[in-house]
Length: 469
Ligand code: NAD
Image (cartoon, rainbow, N blue to C red; front, side, top):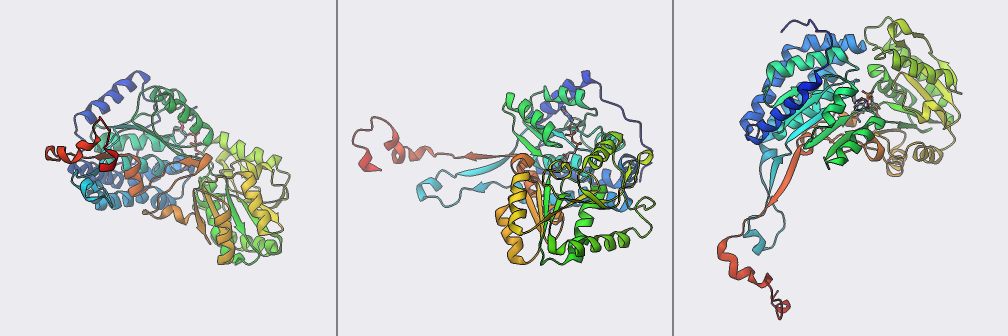
């Protein structure tokens, strides 16, 4: 284990960006990153970097977000290490050429094959809320695919950005992998370079800027964007189960999770029982309150603290419990708000904090209609009720992914691709999907010379040839 001392945040000099990108491009063209052995070695080195710097990363996540130690291991450091283990175990299989399926005998003579080729030199831009996972998760996929990578971590989580830079520079091949630290200026300089792919995680608003810039050079993008996720609780749901699971979905990282439920639609008959169970679960999770607990994160900075506070100041809903804030610590406690209006800002704007609006509905049909009107393409969806009810909701409301009878779970399975749909994103990653997102499936055929007579029917003049094929 190395020292967990963290350097103060330093932006990368703008003038160095072009040469960093060029070095990565030169290395890629030299074929360095393509062999399986190289990819596996870099992934293993990254694994040991994460292992050696685990304490520093836990400390930096604490500095950036007051992130509980348990969450930093489970959702950040160990998350990435487990991803690496999964990818290294499967990489050789994923890299293998695929034969074209279901083809006629004559076509099989051409040996039609799909080769898995790295896209090239790629840019990864990360968001602040999971400052390790959201930066290194896509990088793991890009290394596996054989790409060279420039990573731009979020400057909003500056301590972790510095530790990540140190890990990448100490453990990975400096000719192939680089970290550029900085904010809008540095990201804009990076976007002015030509990339083979841009992988972006962050808000839908900035995602639009990235997509427009990428479109100028027809650069492919994966966009992992904002949530606005609905949760549904029908009158037949188990209120205790729903309360515990959704509370966890709202309180992990103090609600700063793209997959957190943004608003919870509760059938009116079950509202009192659900609210009561929320109170009980909260008491059970934080017996002495959230503020003194080591297990409750803080809002990342004053700007986001003020943004969430404003949302609470402006809601027309009734605060059922919670509401305590302390700006000196960027602390906001879980605040449950009963809202009657589906246009309330806590429903239509992304909260990204520990506020849980409960929108009371008279039926599942109303809830489904409301979800489709508020934001028709959320990142995630959660539904609690009978199997028939949750299936109806799943069928009638789209989303990037969904967990029935739970929060988040679909996002934690390494063999399930994770991604949004419509305005919550495009493309997906995790496990094989991470490899695929940085891979070009190149179709290749080889026509033997001896086949010339067999295929010469294709050449003009065509007269009289239709009957021969
Ligand atoms: P953000 O969009 O503000 O920042 C993300 C990245 O974009 C940062 O690296 C930042 O430096 C860069 N950036 C910011 N403004 C820019 C500009 N004008 N030009 C170029 N680059 C710019 O997002 P955030 O506040 O860090 O993260 C929160 C958002 O991310 C939420 O909306 C959340 O839902 C979303 N998110 C999505 C996922 C997902 O997997 N779908 C995961 C985490 C977070």
